[in-house]
Image (tube, rainbow, N blue to C red; front, side):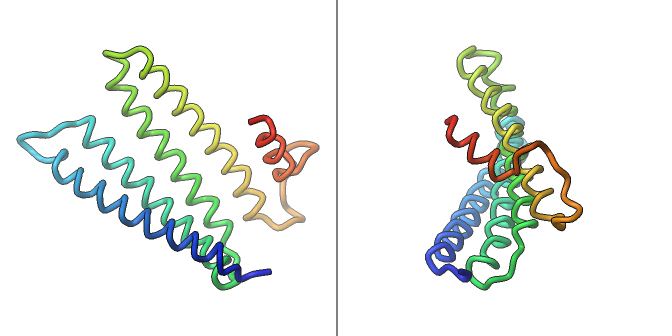
Length: 157
C-alpha cells in the first residue's frame, strides 16, 4: 500500500508551505524583535509561530518517509505534530495576553482556542504512545483503542 504518490505529493507541498511560513515568521521577528522598536507581544507571537512551523515541517518530513518511500517514521511525526500543537497553543495565549486587556470576546476566543490546542496536544501524546511503543508494551488507555476514540471524537464534531 505504500508508497502513496498522492499523499506523498500532499505532504511535500505541506512541507514547502511550512518552510515558507517559517521564513515569513523569521522576517516578521527581524522587524518586531529589535530595538528601538521592540514590540514584545508581536515578537513572542512571531517566534512561537515560527516554532510551530518548524515542528510542522518536522512532522511532515517524518510522514513523507512513509508516504513517499515506505519507511515508517510516524512515531516521530506524532511527536513533532504534538510539539507543533503546543506551540500553536502558546501563540494563542500570547494573543490572549494582548486581547484580554481590551476585547472580552477576543480574549475568550483566544483562551478557548488555546485550551483546544492543549486538548489536541494530549491526544497527540496518546497517539505517539501508540505509534512509538511495541504492541506488547503498549499501555491501554481505555476499553477503546486510540483509533476508535479518534473516530468517535470526529463523529461528535
